[in-house]
Length: 288
Length: 305
Image 1 (cartoon, rainbow over the protein chains, first blue to last red):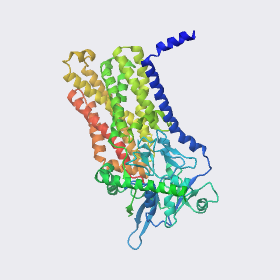
Image 2 (cartoon, chains in turn blue, yellow):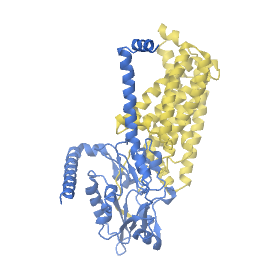
Image 3 (tube, rainbow over the protein chains, first blue to last red):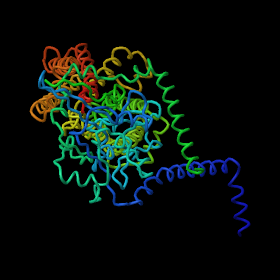
Image 4 (cartoon, rainbow over the protein chains, first blue to last red):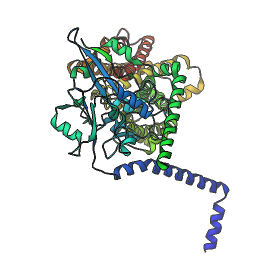
């Protein structure tokens, strides 16, 4: 009986049939592997619940508009030239004798109810258990729908990695127990970073004892970058000025076409330096 | 007056390719709905042009996703859309609707040429629902882009649906006229596509006039609401009416795309003149493209921070 069956099977599974079966089997295996690889990150993130909620408080009374945060961020994260993960919006108010400059350092707000997270079709943007909104660069398909969804305009299309990029609160530094680069470098100590669930932290105390504002609260995204003494006029400035809008329209392709090769070269050099630096540090850690 | 020293650099992520995609899906969905008038609702009058519009529907939806895919920064990763679903995202709804719609369009076209009435009706009914949701989803994609004031309105899906109907009917009129004018001598074509009477074109024109009227009404409500609500909305209204998009919006979309064709289609003096009707349909096609372009690019024009 069994021998009969085996013979029948042998007849059925000729070479072409075998190739067909093997081919489909292999593709299914490959797909499964890809899927598990893609899912792994989610599982890790959801499991490591630490009860932390990272947030940033920017005390604008102490901000002097020196752009050190932008520079530090671009160095730390190797952001291509011409793009910023954090920048300082600067507005001059008043006339001679009564003039003051106002600054708003702006970065990803790591919203509790992030619209970019909702709108991403492949879940490349995800929320970690610590409240960070991150982009999985291996998963992002570059549809740029998150860029137009974000009410804060903090996302940009990384011209060389070909994905969307934005502030990560320096998650690689947080894992080492360090502060984000912009916080560490801030000259006036305007930026305070920490866990707002920890009642002994500096940020918790600062938020509890000051009047705080957020940008665009009407968007209902529950942003987690807070400001002290935020000027509404500064935040709103620049939206109504058509001439200004023309000036700041960017044609990225054109820009890169002219300086593209130079910028790319610099980007690669910087990438090389940062990688060499990382390797050096790692070796130093191993053999102090 | 505030003097801005530095503000965020601003780029416009979604450009002409996305506008083209919305335009072509609109034409395809509308053509499908017109085609179903004959094969689902049993209007025998439209049977012959229903065949043509079914072909337009299938052709349009085959070309449309190419624009979408070419716009991705990571083109090889487009397959992730079929494995990694995020049901909160309108793009995922779109992936599902679009793939089902292409399949359905193909089957529908197949049964038209097989003349299998029972299956035709089944796939016609499913197809109407898919076509409406296809067009509505493109509206939702924009409406759920929360930060952008021009998009974030419940009118957007309806606006997209109705302007799609306008463009689909206009394209059908043009193709029917071209076919009757230049391809009457070919026997093969005459065998597959029987001659279409001018009365059918006039009726399509009347239908088109109704669609344009609704479209004008929705465009009007949209702009009125922009003027009377939040500061962001009033800035957008100014971009449309005074800013760099005013010629496209006022002349391209409203005057030449809707008002002039509307009068050509309703005035008894003009609406029996085939050449004029074709010209009006041509204007409408351009006008609807401007509508897509102004909505997609004009919305992103206002800096957010």
